[in-house]
Image 1 (cartoon, one colour):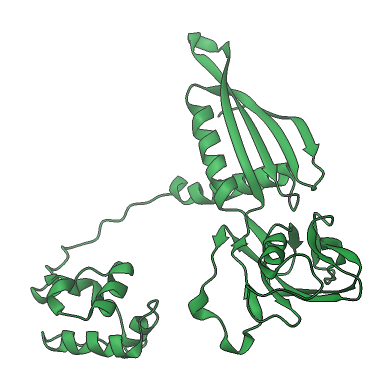
Image 2 (image 1 turned 135 degrees about the vertical axis):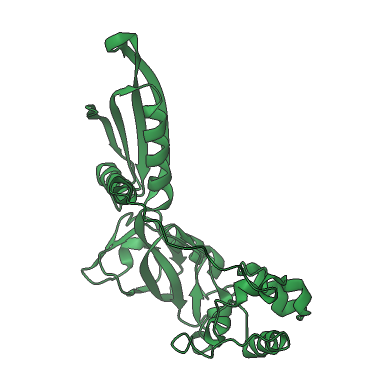
Length: 312
């Protein structure tokens, strides 16, 4: 069994409450430091759950290109400032924060009022500057998620036209660097290595916790392989029919339906045979007209899709 030591040699908290931690892991056999460092880095950067402001509502504003009377920043600047605010939410559901500030005032993240489930990390982050005799009233939405979620303008609720969506960056880890150093020679003359890992977070999670979460995700990923049992399936799979091997291009679909199916990784009739009518409607930008077109094209070659998953 591999035995190594983990030391945190540095820990720093910046003015914006972001945290940097540096860890030394070793000694490791040759090649293991790179394997460990690369795996941890990928999970730390892209797979940890975090919180972010995903939408903003500003009183008197119904689009992002507007200006607010008496406020120095325009709406786009306010949205960008909100996007940079680091928050930590313990609630899996949507949390809403509000602020009402009368000028003259410099509005910061500290002015946002949330429930006890949400903590604002960098409370000094600027939001806007309000002049005397004017006020700013805002509402911000906070959600939990993983990675990066761009605004999907096609799914916006038309009843909430004044709710301005923001591209959400849920990643709690901003940066990860690692280097590999050679250490003393081990038994049998083999070279040993040491991994130096530097983790920078936005302050919503400590580098220690980020390291532990990423390690647990990797354990969960590899654990099923430790008890892998291969079962031989009796018999051979039947050969696909001639109709199933027809490429998507030969169905003569409209350009819209064809492009939507291609983006959904549907390349042939055999791929379509796993769909129901309901499944077709769930394809992005794929309406009932396109679904009916696909159903008719398949019926011309003798293939009928079920209406729903339960009837498949």
